[in-house]
Amino acid sequence: MMKVASRLGKKNGIRHVFLTLATGAAAIAAGLSAAAAMAQEAPTPTLRPATAAEQRAKAAVVLADYRFDDLLWENDRAAFRIYGRALEAAEPPSSSGIDIWGKRVRWPYMDRQLRMGDQHSDYGEGLDFYQVGTGRGIGGLGIWHDNKLWTSRNYVRPHILSAGPDIADFTVDYDPWPVDTTRTVRETRRFTLPAGTNFTRMTSTITSSSDAELIVGIGISKRPMGTRKLGEVRKDAAAARISWWGPADGDKGRMAGAIMVDPTAFAGFAEDADNYLVLVRVTPGKPFVYYSGGAWDRGGDFATREAWEAYVTAQRPDFLP
Picture 1: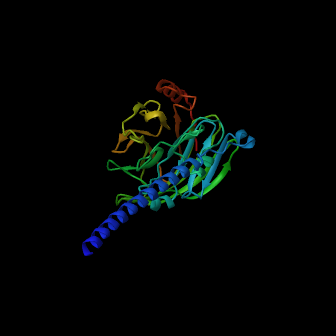
Picture 2: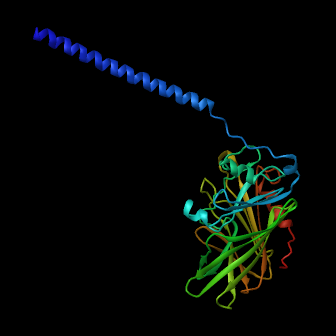
């Protein structure tokens, strides 16, 4: 009887193991099926279309307090962003460089797309695939001293002068930062982007703990694309400007950039590990003007490097503060 009971126990144990395995397999299959159903039911993200009123606007400024105080500005041809202090802790490394987005529509779109939470995909109006990192982006600046660029933290105290519909215009401050051990500087900068141009007019006033002349370096990041390759650079010392045509980033295309400074204050070109730089002589406390601009080769205006460089060369900017 004991042998029979033992055999029955073994059979029951084996049957229990098979039932357990079968139940587990069924549960896994049910879980996978439910996950697949949820994936099919999940809505595809879409960009809210611009209203008729939004499409009539040719420029906009938005303080994106819902996204670490990003400050967005754009017109009918180009779109840019600078970063607030909140981003320094949320997504380090952050910098006071200038971001640029690809744009293919003639009305504002940045705020609508940023609110989606997916500015890095193309939903028909543009996208953000330029990576500022710790560089100057398109037109950020620093103090050039002892062959090093000394830069500020992210902006503070924004003041919007015009949020559109024909011009984007605002000011920000950059709180004091050290230049080695020789001095401390701070900056107030005005950003002005009217309709019909790819260039933001920058009016910068840098004050200093020393009255000695400053050399300001205004930069274009060397490797802001996902490929990490270098772009093509053209330096024009006579006109005091530099243009950059970025490398292709897969199917996203290329970004372009340029900096123009006053030839009477031009102090040469320089480079560091992150940036191509245009150098400018600046008197502390005295405003100076420069222009930074950019474009996307899928935006409809500049499909080639030659077209972008011809546009940059044709500019006749005003440098009066």
